[in-house]
Image (tube, rainbow, N blue to C red; front, side, top):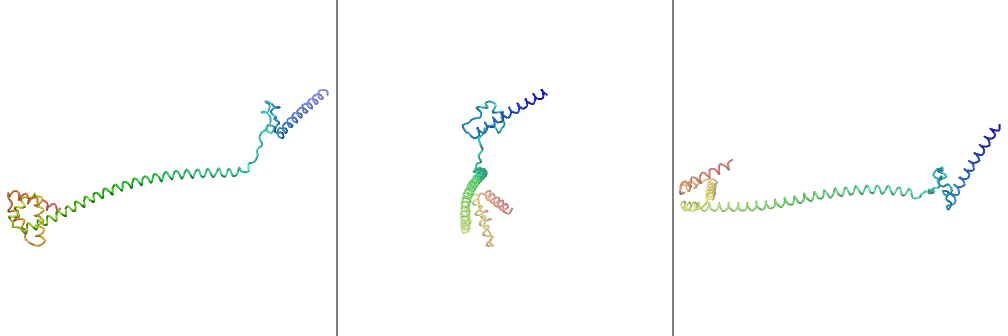
Amino acid sequence: MSALSALSNLLKILFLVLLIIVILFGGLYWFDRLIPEFDMKRFTGPLAQYLPGFLQRGELVEEDPLLLDREVLGKREQVLEAKTRNLELLSRDLDERENMLNEREAKLSEEAKRLEEQEKVLSQDQRQYDNYRDNIRRQAQYFVSMPPRKAVERLQEMEDLLVIDILREIDRRAEETGTQSIVPYFLSLMEPPDRAAAIQRKMTKISDTEEL
């Protein structure tokens, strides 16, 4: 019985020791919470890190009334940032398209200038050709109205291409009026005969080319 009594007494002592420790740390906990100047770590020392979480002093977490507004504002800022990035991408895309359009416009402007210059050249060439044709028609009329031998003397002083154009114009007028052309007679009067034959061959070749 003495052994059981001793064990019972030991258990009571251990229980009382534990109870004292709990009461001690509980008092320290409430002092730490209620008295800001009281620092429990001075009493617990290095054992503070091994204490239960509720015995470790920590900052009281106060509920922020603006927390929800801040979260909403944060989400709005994220949305605005995303929209800003999209706008920047769209702006760069528009700038690239504008540059492409400007390049095309510059090319079209250069092409328009080139065509305008070409048109001017063609118009000038057309005027020169028209003037040349008018001159050929006048000379054809002039040579037809002259005595044949005198007309042939004048023709022989000209270049072959000009002579050919004048003689062909004489042929055309004779065909339009339904009269006999005087061109064969002009060719028969030309000296030397070789030149007359060469002019006649060239006139035939030109006529055949136009028919094709």
